[in-house]
Image 1 (cartoon, rainbow, N blue to C red):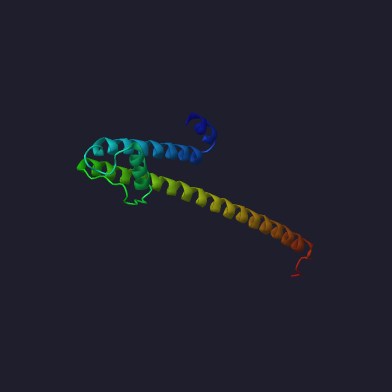
Image 2 (cartoon, one colour):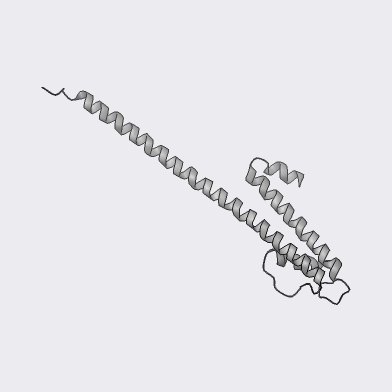
Length: 139
């Protein structure tokens, strides 16, 4: 994480991406451990760490294949917590991407506005030159 953070620390979006990725991995792992702890040995279908990690990944990504699912009340509470947290992290990713996109569109529009302003200034200078060369009106 430290190496990735140093490389991505040049911008806020880079740091957010590193933190979201790290947070997502940590959340999935903790969710998998929690559900495995309450489901193992209770007749459910999440019996190994592999099953639990698969369940956490499909739950957080909202894919939810249904092949692995908690059957105990505690396991379902873990599932709800993981679902809400996964949706929140997805919201952060979406918001970060939207911010990046809006900034790029705004920068392109500003560049176009600057170019048009420069052209307008040139045209004003040319018009001033033309008006200066015209003879003064006779009264």
